[in-house]
Picture (cartoon, rainbow, N blue to C red):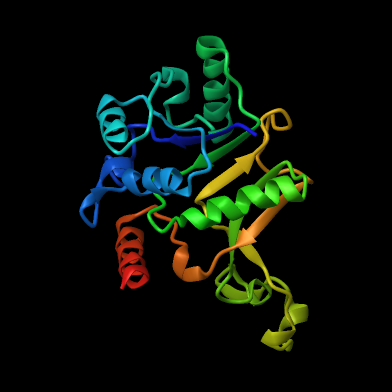
Length: 227
């Protein structure tokens, strides 16, 4: 089965300027995603979709291909991930007459990404005949005890759980924000379907990076992971 890795990395970033190529412990952060994809050994090609020539140059230096520059339409703040992925699929068909049976979207700011998780995700996609697969991690605190503040007063969202024991709650997970395997022939508008599966990652291998404090936490987790 032919497999393509797509790493979407546009040049604009509001909260962390030049986020996708900002130095992360000695390397541009996108390098970690590229290297993890390549070292997994399961992709026919690892490509970066970008509108930025500097990102393209760095991507090529770390072994990824950048066969074309992303369109302006899909490079602004309103472009969706699925629109970017579908643009790549279309361009490969138009330019090279190539299509892939499985594609993995890998985010460029995922330095904790483990190559083995990519392999496990692909195996799950095929063995369970799923549409998509992505990694999740458990919430560190039971969401069933979540609070809200209304009119200056704090209250439970689910008051029926006020006296419940933590060990009695079922596990709840959130998206790890690292990658998404999918079968392009089955996906048009969303990477989440009623035939989606997940692998579970430990919390220390997951860190969403939206602000500088997240960045520092990611560096600390990476150091712990590699010591």
